[in-house]
Length: 171
Image (tube, rainbow, N blue to C red; front, top):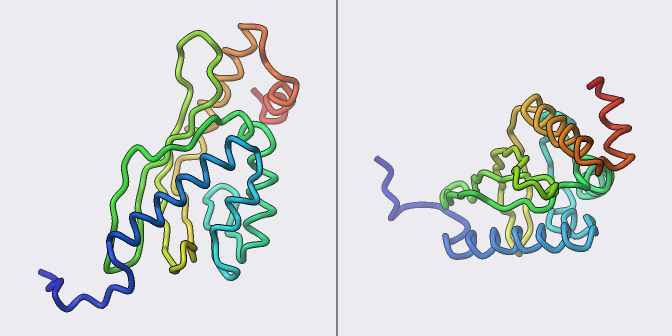
């Protein structure tokens, strides 16, 4: 059993919780405005972003290039929010582990199209993160997005960029 009285934690639970709330608030603002530069600014200059389908991005500028490109194109551009379903704080490691929901735009029929991922965030201090790792099953996201496209097509509301994406992935 770990003796927490001798912990060498750099950050308090309160600071980690506050930083995670800032992370969530920034994601809400980036989603609302479409300005994903806001997201990149949450990382240290030398941060790593480990994305299992897209690869590892080293440094804030690589993270910025990837996130802006990904979130301003389909399907990222049609995900309406990225709320945490739950999170836990590991004070000793300075990390937040959470499940992030990724819902697609409502098609008006009441059907929810979403997939989720696990995210591990490593806190660096001063409201910045030194690493993010997203863990998920890319095939689950692919199936969910295809279902959303088919539903949008049936409703006559499939955007051209989604139609092009669907053709490119061989649906």
